[in-house]
Length: 67
Image (cartoon, rainbow, N blue to C red; front, side, top):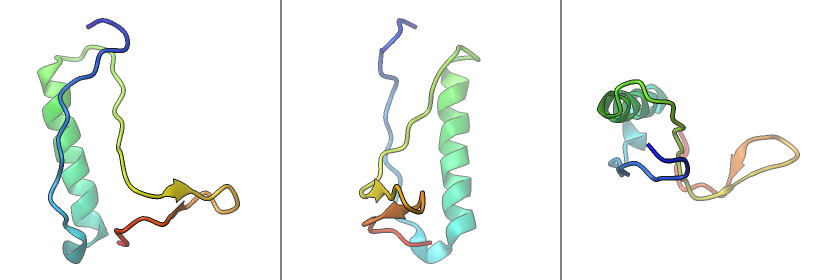
């Protein structure tokens, strides 16, 4: 795969009512599914979310999901 090429994107359903562990499991499932499609090729995995990382705390602020 050429460097800088985007791989398929996916958007998950909002799951905050099901809790933090559920959200992490959904992310892992999505990663596993996408990684299987490239058969072990070197890759990165990015997650887009609203908000910004606080330089003071290192935590995500102004995000609409709290879990």
